[in-house]
Image 1: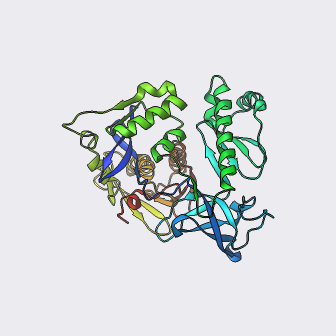
Image 2 (image 1 turned 90 degrees about the vertical axis):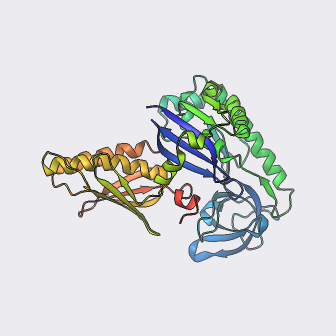
Image 3 (image 1 turned 120 degrees about the vertical axis):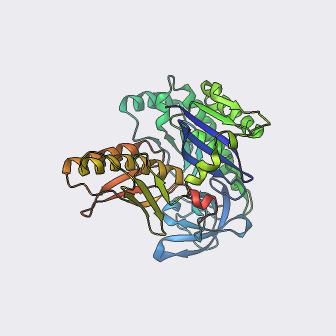
Length: 395
């Protein structure tokens, strides 16, 4: 399958699209001017709400944020010695974990994170090395041996990512760990001397964070934005030099990438209520405050075989398209798929197994829970960013 990641201009904003065989699977709008995600501040605790186990913290610009107290068990305070318990008036180092969504304030954490491609440093009050649970034991032993040379400062942990097991030699992991630890120590030292509401660190452009998170790189990365190309090239040279040949700067003044790839119609597809399947069936996608409902319908399907075979074929195609639409629209929370009813137990099990495998390909954590007695398939998908409709201001 040929994969291309395209970064271009859309309505005066950068957008990134993942295309597989010219079909769009993912789309992000990079609104750097409004996103606070990843930024680190010295905030001020305004009040503590015990019944919801959270604090409200003010950061730069008067922005009020939500800090769950479990995310502040080892707070780094700048106005007093920490006792492990927050009180109103405390000045605390915090990082934006989630951007504001609709009426909800940004969500903070006091466990500061400094991410890299193969590992991340966390100022979480501990002094441990953690390994991804997806990593095999042989890789853990090999990397643990190499990381013996790393000295962790008090209050900082090292989290080794799954990607680290792909390294032929662990030296690159050690170099990245040392760089991130130095970055964390410098920020913590500086933060203790700065005034309240200071912004200590701004996150890199979102598209660079995206590259860092990729487990499987696309065959081609193309952009018609020279500044974006320069930043990605610098990133690749530092973190993944073997991928440099995949990066292309598109320079054709007669046609931009948005037009070349027909992104207008592809983006519109992610906003349509009804999505037609090749078989003639169709999906109806309804996004509500509480959950997302995907309804599968037979539509114009004129299969010559039995009704049971017809329904099963549509359901299998609908499962594949539902998985794609979840990624494209960035749907999250509770997702209910109302497949066409199939009485045969074997057909139901095959459908559920296929749907589970499709969800494993999703870069965002998604899990099939079960099929209810009424035949509704329950899925949960982690909330990472705003939905496509929210990003485009259509909802």
